Amino acid sequence: MNTLFDKIWDKHVVQIVEDGPTQLYIDRLYCHEVTSPQAFAGMRERGLKCFRPDQIVCMPDHNTPTHDQDKPIEDPVSRHQVDTLAKNTADFGLTHFGMMNPKNGIIHVVGPERGLSLPGMTIVCGDSHTSTHGAMGAVAFGIGTSEVEMVMASQCILQSKPKSMRISVNGKLKKGVTAKDVALYIMSKMSTSGATGYFVEYAGSAVKSLSMEGRLTLSNLTIEMGARGGFIAPDEVTFEYLKGREYAPKGADWDKAVEYWKTLKSGDDAVFDKDITFDAADIEPMVTYGTNPGMGMGISQHIPTLDTVDAAGQISYKKSLVYMGFQPGDSLLGKKVDYVFCGSCTNGRIEDFRAFASIVKGRKKAEGVTCWLVPGSWMVDAQIREEGLDKIFEEAGFALRQPGCSACLAMNDDKIPAGKLSVSTSNRNFEGRQGPGARTVLASPLVAAAAAVTGVITDPRTLM
View 1 (spheres, rainbow, N blue to C red):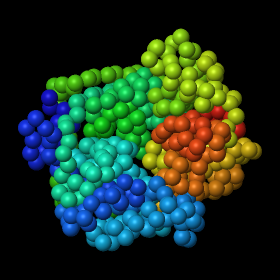
View 2: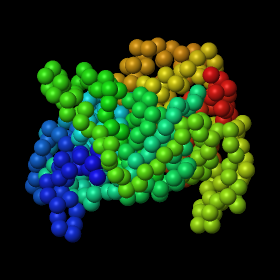
View 3: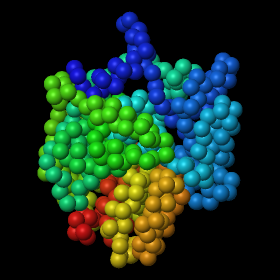
View 4: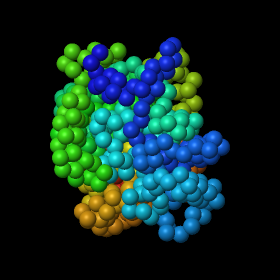
């Protein structure tokens, strides 16, 4: 096979169970407050300590409010979850970046930016968007709570080996097209189940041209095609990004690591179970019109008509349009927007806020639009302030919130009210994902910024 996935996977195999799964060694376990309590409870019941505590990093992100983080959390459920994580990590002697800790933020933003996620690693977390870390050239995937306990106890996991898929995007990305648009475009072509059972390696000149932030966005959204995970072979972009980061190797260890990382690529003769190619020239800024991330289209296009939807998908297609309040054949351009959210583990990095600022600079926030700008971590918050982006936001009428998952999912205070339309840079547009009855259009930070200053869905290229 000789694929990069095979290389990393095979290096981590402890043993293969006959007619069963593989026992796979895990280099890094991330834990947040939502999917870890039962795992810790199971460890206590069995009287176990964590086998390799140094390889486990924990932080709250889903339930953290994005304001007044120095005060006790008002919502009792959120407060209980965050407090429980703090107690569990203290009891088990684990690394914990709590609220207001300068290293806190969304776990999938903090891992790469601190150099905790490295090429060639196996990385797991009780969260589907763990695939984000694949951008570093790691095999990273989400696991269930019982599996979190398994890794705590043994630093291993039982997994069946997924099939391999290569998705190549060749050519040059056009003006206004970001990694988010590439991901939404691929999903619109492959559907939300098109990569089920596969681990995806992204390749091609358009992928290679992406910054580390862009690669993190692309890898993050792989899970929305049903894939087990997605990753990108490490290269000079990866090494440059990691150099000097807090937990990355230093000195002679760095040189040795880079030497090894340079071997992490699929062979020229690598055979994938599935090979798919797209042309970058076909991609424009994207928006979703339905209630799953695969229901996307170019911003200048119209919602598909019923006769173009296959019979099996017609019932859910009709239901989703009713929920969204859209009609078949509609253009989304000019649709009134109530909320704009820029943030999440998909688009909460410095590059995303630079993109947002590039559109709003010298303009004003549209009246009647509520806008939440939420950095993915305190490090991103500091970068925003260092670069003076906060001043650009302030002058345009936007306020910066504190780090957390925020309006990506309705687990904290930042909920979109029922019936309101939100343009969101997050990863999911399911019914009720951003709040009961909330309607979500997924888009890039450029599209979100254009909506924030015009009050309607707008092609950002007209403002660039």
